[in-house]
Amino acid sequence: MANNNDTYLTKRGEYFQFRIRWKGKLIRRSLKTSNRAIARDLRDEYLNNLFKYNQMDAPVEINENITFGEMAKIWASIHKKQVKYSTWPDYKSSMNERILPVFKDRPINDITHIEVLEFRNSLDVCAKRANNIMIPMKSVFDLAQTNGIIKRNVLRMLKRLPIDEVKIDPFSYQEIQMILKAVDQWYRPYVEVLFFTGMRAGEANGLTWKDYKEDMEPFPQLDINKTFVQGQDGPPKTKSSFRMIDCLPEVVSALNAQTKLTGHRKHIFLARDGSRMTPDHFRNVVWIPALEKAGLEYRPPIQIRHSFATMMISSGEVIGWVQNMLGHASLQMINQRYYKWKPRKTRNDGQAFRKSIRRFEEKESVPVAVNADLERDNDKQYHKLVTLADFRHKKSRRNVG
View 1 (cartoon, rainbow, N blue to C red):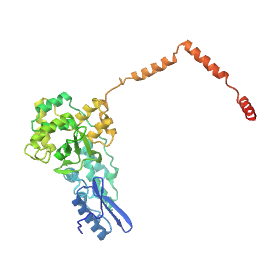
View 2: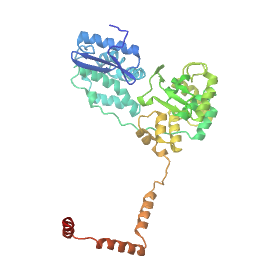
View 3: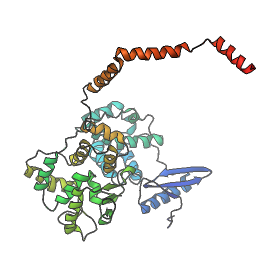
View 4: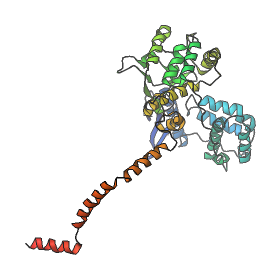
């Protein structure tokens, strides 16, 4: 039932949506892909299921003794097409390397809440990573529950672990200059652009020369409209990640230098051998050697982004501008994460309060002579006051006259 058109497909933000009125009922589902060909394949699959089973997903054969591994295989065949291509490798890794070795041959109905808790506690990872590992496992249980295979979804009772606050350990401006002097000169423009834009590595790796708007006024800008992740170009992380960012003089200078290296190629930043830049290549070939040569202790590349944010905020730049440069959806994360780098316009020790109190006390202690004059003026006003009855009597006489 393949079609060469987009019937029943609509674009909602960055993703396609399947939308059809079936037997008087409107059915909608996000396809979670911006790839038109994949969206059409999913559309055709859903249409086939609607005609054959009267539902979008093919029914799962109910078997009370089905193992978790068997259920996971069914889940994988469905979900692989529904999640972002950049997300699926992590789900696959979590399932194959962590979850299946423990639960593969267990009947899914026999798995208990306590076993799940013990499994999560055994993971030698941080809280955030543990939560992410449990996502595909929970999805398998949700699919089993939807199809009546399990009586109770024990993963529904599993609360997410509280995540530790992100550790921010930025580089100072002096340390940044040390790194730029130490880094392999082929990669210096790349590192400099990261430090003075705050963009994500995947965003920088996806940049093409068409994205560099050199003639924009009042200064050049970079159009962030894609990201290079897991070997593929795709949409940025979030809707707010689509943005235009300003190019500071350091960035303009770095891009001018970069034109001599890759100006004849489509993408701005490439590895020395001409291949696309990847996080692993940057960390192992560029970043670690540069820190060692500069005599600095290792800090993960994410601190480049934090360094930009803290430099700009501590310098007094407008928070909203920093938010746009980083591509965050709201100011809340900026304020929470980088609060202590905000310039202190007061001493933050109660002195501002004491100063306001002194102003109040000074206003109250007006000289006696002035107070006496004010009292005389007030007395004159008070002498003019009359009772309500007298006021009405005088008003009625005026009306009669």
